[in-house]
Length: 331
Figure (cartoon, rainbow, N blue to C red):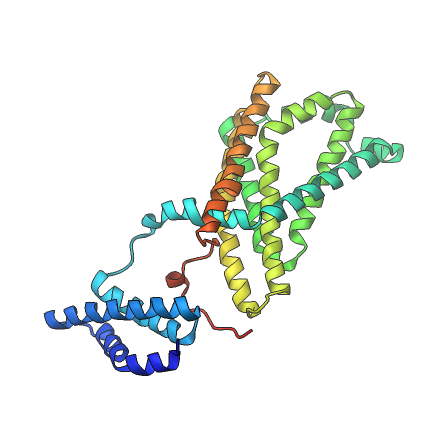
C-alpha cells in the first residue's frame, strides 16, 4: 500500500472529518456526515494498520477518528465499567509477563535462605552472638508463636497487610534503581534462614513450618512478584530496545504498577490468613491447606488467566486510546 498516495487521495475527506470533529454544534445533516466520514476513515485506518502496522499516517487518522467518536458517542464509560476488564485482562497479563522473573526471584530466595540456614546451624560463634543479643529460649519457645496472637485478628490483619502492601509497592516503585527488590529478597531470606536454624536447634522445626506455611506461601510469592516487577522496570531503562528510554519506562511502568493493585488484594488475603488462621489450634494440614489454596488461586490468575489475556494482546498497559498516540521509533 502506498500510504502517501492514500493520504493524498483522502486528504479532503479527512480534513472534513477533522473540521466536523472540532465543531461544538452540528446540524442534523452534519451529524449524519460525521458518522459517514467516521465509518469511511475507520475502514481506511484498518487497511493501513493491516498493511503497514503503526505509521505516522495511521496515528494521525486514529486521533481524528477518536475525536469524531467522542462527538457522537459522548465521553468514555465510567471508571467502574473498566473494572471487569482490569481484573480479567490487564492484571493477569501483567502478572504473566513477570512469571519467569518471579520464578527466578523465588529460586534466589530459596538459595539465600539455605545458605543462611547452613551458616547459622554450623556457626557456634553466630549462635553465641545471637544468644547475647536476644533471649533465644524466649523467642523459640514463646515469642515465635505468641507473635500471631498478641493482637486481635482484625488488628493483626490490618497491621501485616498495610506493612506488606507498602513493601511490595516500594519494590515496584523503586524498581528502576535495580537493587531494592533484590535487597528485600535477601533480607527476608536472612530472617527466615536464621529463624529456621534457631527453631531447628531447639527441636521446634515443626512449629516453625506450621506457623509460617499458612500465610507465608502467598505472602512470599507476592514479594517475589513485586521484586520481579521492579526488575522489569529496571531492565526497561537499561535495555529499552527500539523504544526510547522514556517510552520504555512509561509502558513498563504503567503495566507493572498495575501489579500493585493485584498484590494489595493478594496480600489482604494473606493478611486475613495470618490474622485469623495461623493462630488457630487446628491440625497443620488444615491451616497449610488453606494457605496452599490461596496460593493456587493466585498462580491460576498469573499463569492460566494471564496466558489467555497475553494471547489476546494484553500487556497490562493502558489501551491505545487511553495512553494516547505513541511516538514512532525507526529500527
